[in-house]
Length: 530
Image (tube, rainbow, N blue to C red):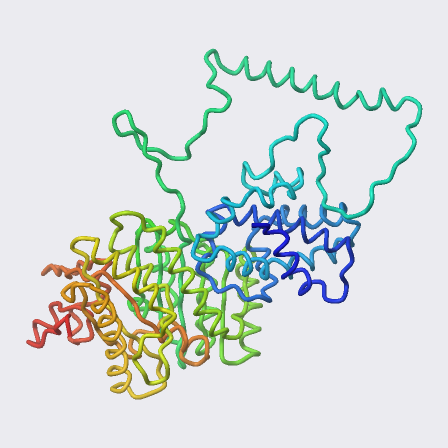
């Protein structure tokens, strides 16, 4: 597959419009190769694999290369090599990046993007210039060509010019060769002197390994960025809160900041603490400044993921002020307003991401990873209906096979709605939708005893209900591992998998996902299999 040719046909016309100059087309071709090589890195792609990247998100390029020096080098080098104004080059790159991202994801299909790009490295590697080695992961540059092969760091279409050799040109031609010989001798001497018994030069270096007898097992290093999603209510209260963290240290740090800003309301924040997530959050040190800014805007929402903060609010003026204030409070972060809802794009991207997550599960997966992968998908039920859309059936079919193959896997399917109807109606609708998902999986052969359902209605929002985007995110199906909650007399011990919605099993209400002490006390335990 010729990835560069495809991007040139699909993306370049959208970026250049009527200005289809050979120099700018050539510049974009080379940028596509550098961009593809960057996305082939699992750590880079993992930072925004599950984000909804808008096609006009010109800040996306800044998030792919977080170091300003690298971004400046790319635009400067491309501008110089192709005789394009530096400012114009930067603008072309910023416009091309999100469009190229969507095209590459489309080409990859169900294959994870980094794997797809590494599998097809040969189709774009020769377009990558030598200077790009400083802005790309190691191993992305093509091997040094054989003697006599012309090395070029540009795909310029300008014809080659022949000029007569001046006197003395023979000696000038020898100078680079002499220099290479000297450098080679120095390198050899350095390698020889570094150690008495040097390792072979080609010995690979593992980033992290575990010894097991005579075997070495590589440890996966790819993790999802830690994240925090909050929304405020009409009275500036904490309306919704979710957190993904790699360890309890980060969880505590974020919870302390939430408590300082919102008081006891911070206790409603649900946390998924697992080593699948990063143990650091770039914005953690600025949360003391960030959270009060968001709190002061009614019905606002904010998502912090990686080095990006995305915000929304129903009032446009308040939204723009929110972006400005947050950028001042966290200058190292990329702060952006959430774009308009792209319904079909959100659905398609979620299915692609969920399919990739399921592909990466491997043999005998952790049930929690299965639940997370299934929860990525958007099941976009029709208004007031509980019929599984055709778009989700292939993914649920895969899930049925996995659930049956993994012993002792029990999943709780939870339905959620937005707030645009009565509480009773939303509870009933969310229950029907959760039941519909269970019934479909059972029809595909899943043992019904492995699945239970719960309709939460509008009681567990993850975003605001005042914007179209927020309501869309609140209408969802979630999967969690159906473990028992252990409650000790002297305190509360909750499994991360159980996810009690208010994190307080002694609160004298019965809104818990699974039975706990307050249900037992009142004699009305909820049947988890309803």
